[in-house]
Amino acid sequence: MIPGSFDYHRPASVDEAVDLLAGNPGGALILAGGHSLIPMMKLRMAMPEQLIDIQDIDTLSSVSVSGPQIEIGAGVTQAELIASEDLAQHCPILRETSLQIADPQIRNVGTLGGNVANGDPGNDMPAIMQLLDATYELTGPDGSREVKARDFYEAAYFTARDETEMLTAIRFTAPPAGHGASYMKQKRKIGDYATAAAGVVLTMDGGTCTSASIGLTNVADTPLWAEDASNALIGTTLDDAAIAAAVAAARAITDPAADGRGPKEYRTHVAGIMVERAIKQAHSRAG
Ligand SMILES: Cc1cc2nc3c(=O)[nH]c(=O)nc-3n(C[C@H](O)[C@H](O)[C@H](O)COP(=O)(O)OP(=O)(O)OC[C@H]3O[C@@H](n4cnc5c(N)ncnc54)[C@H](O)[C@@H]3O)c2cc1C
Image (cartoon, rainbow, N blue to C red; front, side, top):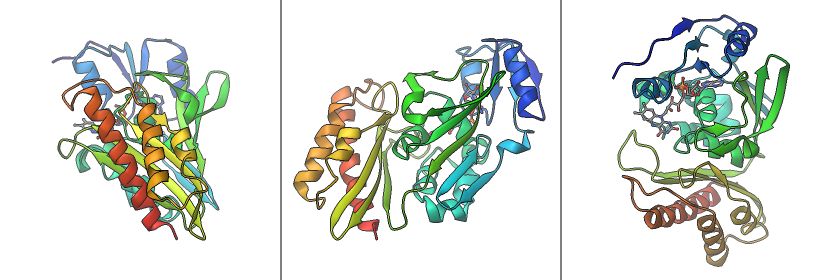
């Protein structure tokens, strides 16, 4: 398939990119790694008049770990997330999740910003950003504003980002030292999107769960932060009854589409299994 025609721009700064976006509201799109956008353009599901390639904007490519505060530029690739020892030490679920995205070729150019800005419920990073309670920095003609990942996703491919804004950074506080984390993803084959996936971060103190946060991928129109499921674990020893309550609460908020990955009931069932496995693995990793 051949995409529609467009003008190609390669700005060297965020200001320049935002000027281009604001100069053609709705007609201009950011091109990051292109691994979601180019296929959409080939199918003519996306037909930008202006394509703004952000790969030359150096300020989008840094990872900063300052105490527990983590800031990741929107242009950081999934391969760079995997390679970062700082991130692996402070927030290992990022490496574990990135390693389950697509394949090495795609991870070499696919960016964190593209993954979370895209709005595809199949993307793995949005649920992780929701469970970490991350904040997205959006920069537009009037400056920058912050939106919580938990408030960003409105429907499939619809987000709180205005069409004149670009995502510039992702920020969050790393979970405390000694936390346990796990991302469990069932997929049909390597490189596939999730049939259902669950991420869990939790802390334990003297055998009792003192904090827990659960995110779900590809089981609704948007990524899901499973608040009731998370709360079902806090104050428990993560015994079977607590895990069963969390699984039931997580399943209750899912609303997956029936597709080639299975009917709705199957994907809801798998979501619960992913939640159970992720809780147990996170528990086994908690110090
Ligand atoms: C075969 C295949 C398998 C895949 N499997 C998975 C998978 O299992 N899990 C998964 O999570 N992903 C998967 N992906 C998607 C891949 O991870 C993409 O790289 C990612 O979703 C988008 O990142 P990108 O940098 O390529 O963004 P692009 O494709 O360049 O952009 C995606 C969308 O986000 C917008 N955008 C990008 N950056 C910004 C920004 N800074 N500000 C505002 N808007 C922006 C673009 O305009 C576009 O609408 C797969 C892709 C392929 C081709």
